[in-house]
Amino acid sequence: MDAVTAACQQPGSTITIAAGSTTGRRLPDLLEVTGTACREQLPDSARRRDGTPVDIPHGAERYTTRRILDAELDLLDATGEPTAHTLPENAVEAAVADLRRAGVTLDEHQMAAARHLTTEPARVACVVGPAGSGKTTALRAAVTAWQTADRRVVALVTSAAAADVLVAELGVPAETEQAFAAWRADLLAGSHSLIVTTDTDTAAELNARAHLDRAAAGDVDTSRTVGLADGTRGGVGD
Image (tube, rainbow, N blue to C red):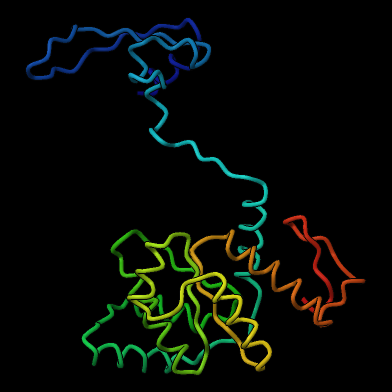
């Protein structure tokens, strides 16, 4: 296929190749491939019914905004920022044992995911996997471990359907307002909250509200600030 690829990349060049035999289809013995200068010049035979070139995967285009990209970069940075708010590994083992007695068994991958969510010494810990891979079960073990350690856990989601699933599976509130109220209550009580979210917009919104709240309380020195990637400014104490 190297010769075919080279021909397609050179406008005006033509290469003839033997057509493979296909049962039940009438194909010519030889096929001609002619290169074009750009995709706009592709023949109809190289396009789908909607006009898109066949070499472009369907649904491959993705759109975003600078605000989303900046928020994602902030979260990526947070995965490398250390935190002391972790749990010992035996806390996860105890949570897994509790779930096993309740009829829920975790495999080794789910246990590793739960351990990562609770013992990783970083501000943000992530678990990524396709639907049905056991993420919610792993998260259930992590939530059990955090709650056993007297930590409040609040789930943040992007849809009511996802909220219903998390409430049913994890038994934790799944509303942004509840998350902010829980964070503020824990802050005033000198405690710490673990927030679980599925999108960067929610995390960015809560971060901005937390900044304003702490600034109003005098915990953040807004006279000494630095510019952040999302266009906002952070003060001493954030």
